[in-house]
Amino acid sequence: MRRQQGGGGVMIWGGIIGNAIIGPFRVPEGLKLSSATYCQFLKNSLEPWLDNLPLATLKNIIFMHDNL
Image 1 (cartoon, rainbow, N blue to C red):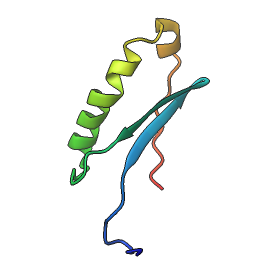
Image 2 (image 1 turned 135 degrees about the vertical axis):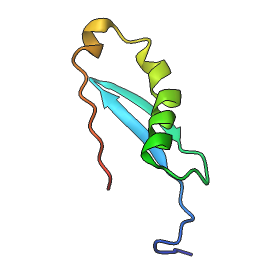
Image 3 (image 1 turned 30 degrees about the vertical axis):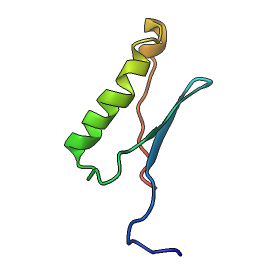
Image 4 (image 1 turned 60 degrees about the vertical axis):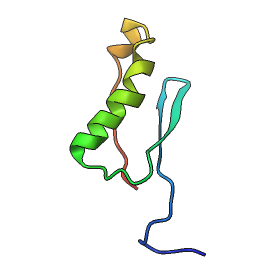
């Protein structure tokens, strides 16, 4: 059964840096994504991954968000 704009989906976040895929990370069910909760989600999921990147790579990262 498909519900339009009625929920029931799973939200996944992922990214690409160079030739590496980051994630996927599942957004916790029921989490309302405000700017504050989105930033906290990125801090918890993306930041630990970024800690392992070389400084030269970190200097060239451009963060882009696509809200399709």
